[in-house]
Image (cartoon, rainbow, N blue to C red; front, top):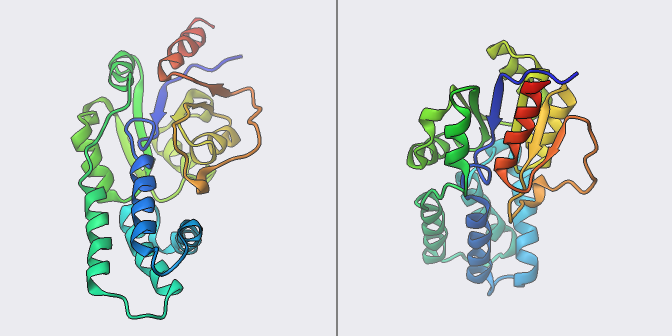
Length: 235
């Protein structure tokens, strides 16, 4: 029997607003700046290795990414690093932090449609200060009953939030673009999870296998969650 959904949670980056494209652009600029020290084709993979090694230290977000840019450069050259190049890296990070917040299509209308009937949550990874900046600039904060900036998105992390809210997993649906972070952990708890793909996916968030689960919802348009919720209400 289908549950009655009380809480609907949204990921933020690349679900509510654009994010990953800014990292891809920054990586390309980093590779161009570093080309004199290392082949462009290899520098991105070296950067990714540095990011993965430092993820437990820095967590997710632009500031950790900036530190990984500098560390990667120190690993690929023994030459003195010009201060001007380091300044360009810092400027690259600052530009990312100053990017406009572009709310994705249909998000605002969906939140307006859902907020009268459901408790809406925003559950996202990332740097606290930066995510708060983006939320404020997005103009979406007022639609959410609860907002959580999470250090990670494992099943235990979701369970802790559900316990705090007094919500059973079967009465909860998570909407997000990452199968690894937004979908699989929630399905493991017995909740519902709706995947809405974004045009860019960070290598760390990629999942190769198909997701097969009775509580999995595949979306091509975020508004497609509405008929799913209607079916539950009528069950």
